[in-house]
Length: 471
Image 1 (tube, one colour):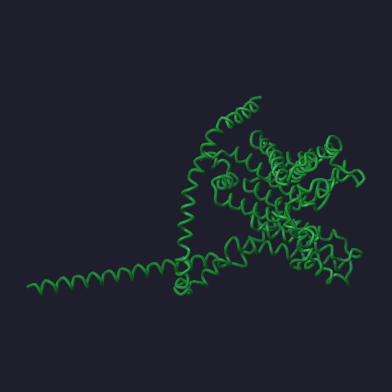
Image 2 (tube, rainbow, N blue to C red):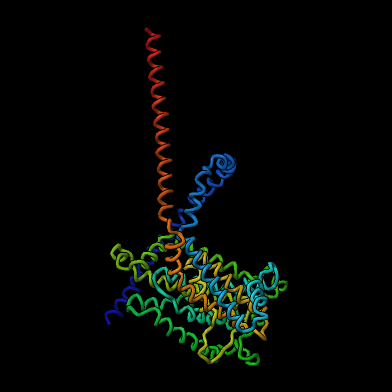
């Protein structure tokens, strides 16, 4: 009972603090004219910077380039990139071995179809890759953001399913436009993410356990809802699937700039929204106080609590934003009218949010890395449709992505191996570069001292000459 009272007291305190928060928002908007002035002054300086650019290119210290390139190639980010590429290459090799074992004659040409099936720029397959990558990217970002606080959001599937519920509730039942459906899916996913966040923060319930349970609750809640009071959203004649948005509510479709028909029905602004979400998450993590606090809480909760950071609040916020991203992924998939949601009284969760775990870890838990991991996963999924279905089923892409999951779990080991055996002299490279930098600085200081001393001597000589002339 005491813990329940504490939870309600914290909620009441949060509502009491709302006026102060609104004041802070008001102060932020008051400073907007100053920010616009700074942007204006910066834009005015651009022509001068453009004029000075050729001179900077001439004066650039090109002798330092080899050392800088070595530092770049041996940085932690580069090593993580090598590890991810190693996981992809190993998984593709294992996939090729499986194809050879199934059908040796057709293995190599079908393997090329798997990789290059959707690479033609501007083709229908190219837009299909982008369309399927948008929701997958949001689910991957959901995993990445929660991980920054030291949590594993395995409840991403339930948050995705609740996002589906919010999407069709407003799209088909209430006839709302696409931006309302998008916003409500985000809110529904955030609310579903808050539940394991509160349980973790205030009752120390594992977010993995509560997330798994909430996945099934969300699924069966969806099944019950679409079979009862949302039955008007379901077309029983079409195999108990939801009605097509293009027929039931065209205003709920994502804008396509009149390119949907020419791209096989795949193009919409979904991929643009997903990339903006990735950039926004990267900005929050790297450039904001909230992102710093979340990362600090993930590294050491006790230390952050001692420093005055509210770790419980950060846990709830992290899982709320994580759930919002999963709900956004669901809305981007179904508002693009890529597929009708099948209402089934079964225990099968959608596969797409689980693939979000793959792309999150394959992208080294980085928002920008997740973009490229998502495109690769979507590429081989689309490429599997070009393979001979008689010899190789479409599930071969799922086998390869499954191998990537196990490979991504070995990235930490690969980073250790690369650091130990490939870049043995990494510390030496950094030490030598620092040494050369300090030597250059010392030489610069020495040259400045010499110039100053020579100027002092010249001035002394001139003063003596003046005195002699006066005498």
